[in-house]
Image 1: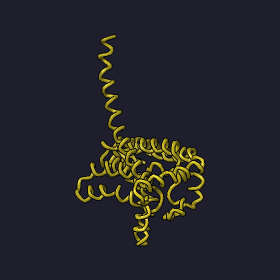
Image 2 (image 1 turned 60 degrees about the horizontal axis):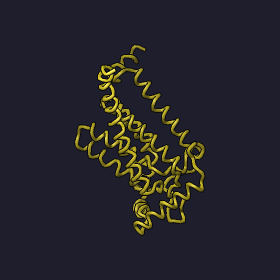
Image 3 (image 1 turned 90 degrees about the vertical axis):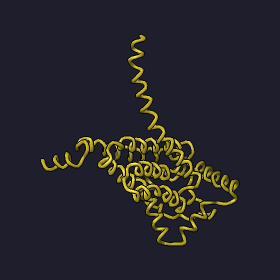
Image 4 (image 1 turned 90 degrees about the horizontal axis):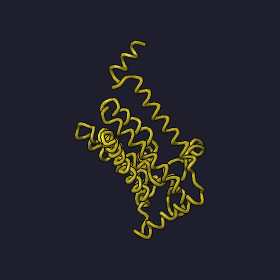
Amino acid sequence: MERVVALGQRVLPRGWRDFGIQLFIWFGFYFSYLAVRHLTNGTPSRAFGNGLRVISLEQRLTHHLFELTVEHIADSSSLLLTAAAWTYWNSEFTVIGLALLWVYLRRHERFRRFRNTILLANLIGLIGFAVMPTAPPWMFPGEGFVDGVNHSSALLQSLGNPYAAMPSLHAADALIVAWFLVSTSRTIWAKALWALWPLWVWFCVIATANHYLLDVLAGIGVAFAALLGTAWVPRVFERIRGLGPAIANLL
C-alpha cells in the first residue's frame, strides 16, 4: 500500500485522489453523454429529411458530392481504408483519453482547460443532435455512398444515436486535441504530427461515409466555440471577482 501511495506521489501531479476525481469526471461524463445522446435520437423521417437536405445543398453549391471523391480515394487502397476505419473508431475515446492522460501527467497546467474544452464541445454537439438529427451518408447507398465501417454492432444499435451526424464531434474533438498537443509538445516532429491529426480525422470520417463535409465544417465551428468559451468564461469570472470590492464599497 505504501508503495502505491509513493508511486502516486512520484508520478501523479496531485496524487491519487485528484486522479480518481478526474477519472470519475471523464468516465461519468462519457457514459452520461452516450445515454443522453441516445435520448436525443430524433425520428428517422426527420433525420433522413435533414440528410437529404445536406446532400441537396452540396449538389446545388458544387454540382458534385465531395464525399464521393474522398470515398473513391480511400477505396483505392485496402490499407488506406482500414486505417481510415481504425481512425474513425479510435479517434474519439481512445485518442482523446490518452491525450488527456498525457497532458494530465506531463503538462498538468494545461489539463483543466483541455478537459473543459472537450466537455463543452460535446455538450454543444448534443444540442446539435437534438435540434438537427441527421442521417449520415452511409444511410444513402442510392446516392453512391458506401459504409466504410461496421455499424451492425448490437451495442451501437442499443446505445448509440445513428442520426448524430450534425455536427461532427470527431472533427471538433480532433481539432481540440491538436490545439492543445501542438502547444504542449516540445519537439518539431511532434508538433507537426499533431497539426496534421485533424486533417487526417476529417478525411477519415468523410472517407468512411460517416459525415458530410458540412458536418465537418460544423464540427470545426463547435471546436472554436468551445475554445473561445473556455478562454472567455474564466476571464469574466475574474472580472466579476475584481469588481466585488468596488461594488461592496459603493453599497
